[in-house]
Image (cartoon, rainbow, N blue to C red; front, side, top):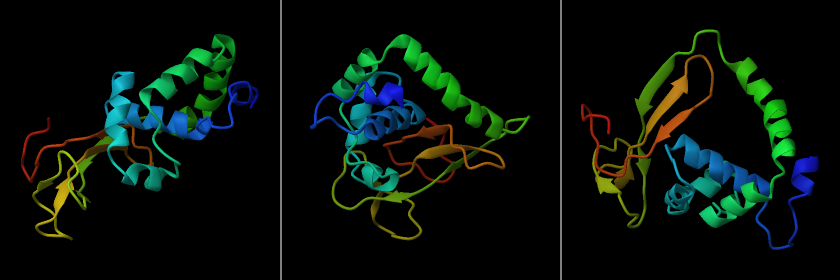
Length: 154
């Protein structure tokens, strides 16, 4: 808690939860740069699903990490990573699957394709990897193009 209270400086600042979730979701969606956060901002369902006010900008996340004292950050990560490591089974098996996310309107990258619940509706087809026998999803790969059964993984 000491880490978080030292970072809140402005009444207009984004909630720390939103900043961290924006960063984590980007990493899980195969984001490798701060600028990849912008991909998450394009999808209006992400804040709704994860309880965010909004996906914050890449500048907000960058400023957040620059303001963290390295020793406090390392202490926080060490303390909060322990429950995650304990939750993993001894042998980690990733179950890969794709899902259909129907889209309404004209979101960039959404295409008409396989969609059993809404035939003819534009949708995304992300690829997920879930650790077997847990609810942990360490990989969420956003695939903006049209993917159907049997299409290769990009």
